[in-house]
Image 1 (tube, protein in one colour):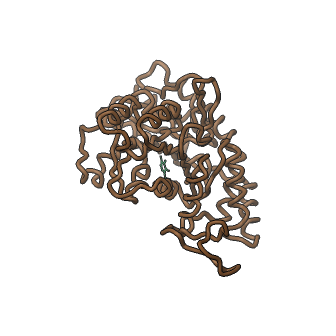
Image 2 (tube, rainbow, N blue to C red; image 1 turned 135 degrees about the vertical axis):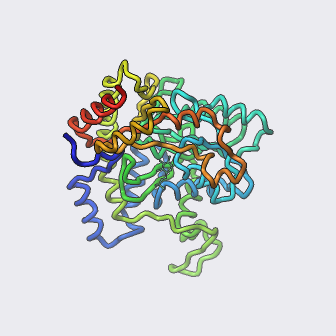
Image 3 (cartoon, protein in one colour; image 1 turned 60 degrees about the horizontal axis):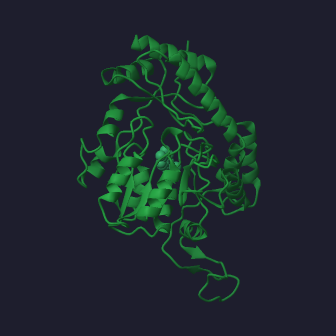
Length: 387
Ligand SMILES: *Cc1c(COP(=O)(O)O)cnc(C)c1O
């Protein structure tokens, strides 16, 4: 019998995490100190990319990517409707026109064949960026995207907020960590409490391109530089220049210390999440509950475990689970149907696969500290309702 609500996602904070934060608090720096640099270094090493820039949250990371790519009002970008709205909003902040590309029904990720059709229908260079999302933790085919990017001339910004620790095997048989930016220009992560690494608020941009990294780092802190190599003149040790209109998108030392500590458990988290996924898979075999697909060879990061049920039963199941302390979630309401995006002409019917997905999807609790007892309860309650 479970008497305390089980959320769909939950952070995991250990005593070691707490000690790391306390140590940062007692140090000389609360912001702009050594923890941020260390978090950037260890995260970049973990992923296998050249640069990581830690920022205040994942949304800021997306906005900084748009700024680094010099997205201007009226520039067009393409993203998926099945995502948190921030994937699109980060580019709207720069005045970009957001074009949605429908999803592929098996993985729920942006349909790259449909993307190609959109790209083909306009002159090359029409779209400045494509922003796929590794939705639920499933890696997008970055290699295929690279081919399209080279042909049609857009930048790839992968929203990997769901997928740190995930990976895929490319056509050469090489394992590619999500965020290593072998094929992408930029990758974005979030450290919100429901995500794999939880720092309260926090985010990261990763890249191998020094030009983009320099811009992200500059825009993160007011567009101000003290780098002697970049200054137009130099009046002395105190001197700095504001060269661009940037923001304060910095992360704190306490958050960075927490991030460093949590990164050590990321592999464990991915393993445990996959174990939980396997148990759900097995439990729902042969039932009316459709479990998530995954291709061979990739490591799904399982931010979310999403089942699909008969649309006529979905709300009933959600309510029944809630009454039984299982707080499942519907993720996501297609972004193009949001009142804000409708003002640009988007409407129901524009993205049939995404809209169909929305009527059936339900994310069951998925986080590494979910206990066997809790998972057994969730499975039993889903089965009880569906029977
Ligand atoms: C969480 C999330 C974001 C935004 O991250 P914040 O850190 O909450 O700003 C962006 N995109 C996706 C897909 C997310 O899940």
